[in-house]
Image 1 (cartoon, rainbow, N blue to C red):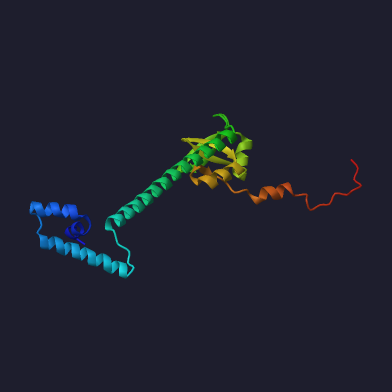
Image 2 (image 1 turned 180 degrees about the horizontal axis):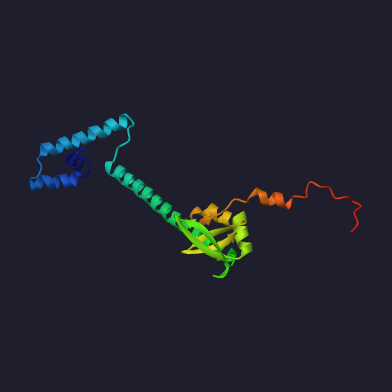
Length: 192
């Protein structure tokens, strides 16, 4: 339906039609044809139980649906950003609360790789052994390297794995050494 048909169909009422006739913008035959066409169309739609299609209403509904979809997408993006901020805050808190003190320049150097670069931190012998055995891990926070226990590193890894720089797998040899005498039975009557 073009604009003229819409105008003739919807807008031209008796009062407006009379004004247009007086102004000479339309002639009486054309006005009567438009009125008769409108009447026939309404009668035909009523007899066929067809709903009157209002294009303006359809366009308005489509616009509302598009706006709602756009609003949902913006809300989803906003929620995603807020969730990322919350995860970063959780990771920072986990690191700050659970970090283990590093040594100073007089201690043992522990070398590791970060982005294909070899980095070094100074740690005590005990900390060095625990990192090697997988009991401790090295994480990076705000450009600084920190040492955290392995369970904390696992929690950080669940949230964002990019913070974990080094997490050695626990070596099964260590457990075997601890349990070397596990196979031997201790007699109950042993007196010390």
